[in-house]
Length: 138
Image (cartoon, rainbow, N blue to C red; front, side, top):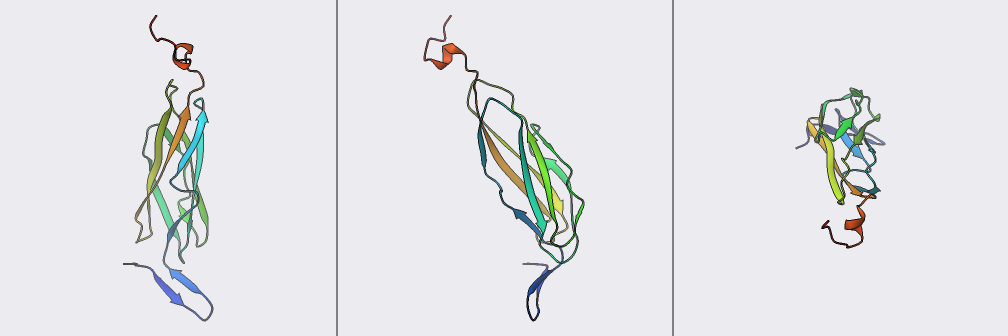
């Protein structure tokens, strides 16, 4: 049940109250990245409501991810963002790393929101013994 309300005026619809809305791209696969660079991904969201939206308490879902600080308040129509920097330790194997964050909002229909993605890494420094199908024995 929506706590906010739509007001029908003579020309348009307006949402009363704060309303959190994700902007594309969301929750997807990133990469492949060759080698193991730092991956920087920006998530964007906006206040699609009619009053101030408050966001905060952002927490990364992985120790591999550092987050930028989002704006604490978004006016109606205003866009905010969080920049995530993902670090993956090098390995000789192809790797997928899940990353993302959660945060709270003042939208009564979405008091907690989460964003997630997966980064795919391909090694570029595979030891010759493994790359060419040769024996791994010494």
